[in-house]
Image (cartoon, rainbow, N blue to C red; front, side, top):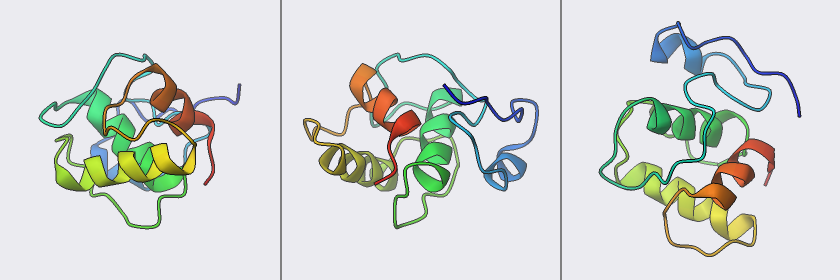
Length: 101
């Protein structure tokens, strides 16, 4: 796996300016994350959607899993050949960290 960018202590705005290798540094696990969740897991999803997976529409990293983040997750799932459900589980985390659609 590629090395990770060290941005965990940076502000979300500063982290968004850093292109990650395979992680933005907010979260490294695979816990189920879905609409309505907030915090470091969601910052990680938003950052990876913007910089690593190639999502064509920017998601503002705000740490809140709302409709824009869900659209990005669904796009990635479709692109990666996963079940399109908007939930970020183990397979979607893997796709976020390894896919370039």
